[in-house]
Every structure is written in structure tokens, then in C-alpha cells.
Length: 85
Image (cartoon, rainbow, N blue to C red):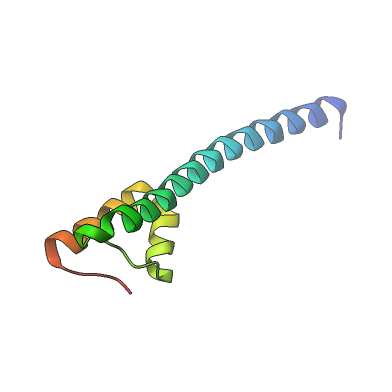
């Protein structure tokens, strides 16, 4: 492989690494915010009867979808009375 080919391959790999880093960082921040929101809802919502159990299903939904997942779980509970255990 020529020097030009090696340089081009290195540049492509660096660009891919940067894109993956920024996508993963965004996903990680959203996940952490979702878990914090789930814990805060359970802590401050208990006096009002608003709590989401910390089951494996709820944690997976929150981990994948972050704040949107917590919002969906809240809507399921408030609108339909459905709680995932």
C-alpha cells in the first residue's frame, strides 16, 4: 500500500471515530438524564402517588430512550393506568 493510501485510510478512520464519539456522547448524556429523571420522579412523586417502579423493563426503556422514555412511561401510567413491572 502506498503512503497516500495509508494517509487516506488514517483520515477516514479518524473521521469515523469522531462521528461515533459524538453520537455515543449524545446517547450517554440522554441516558443519564433519563435515569436521573426516573429517580427524581420516584423520590418527589411518592407523596402524590406518582411513582414508576425501578424494574428492569423501566430501566431498559429509560436507558435506550432517555427522557423521552421516562415521558412515555409517565403517559402510560397517567393516561391508561398501565405500570410496567
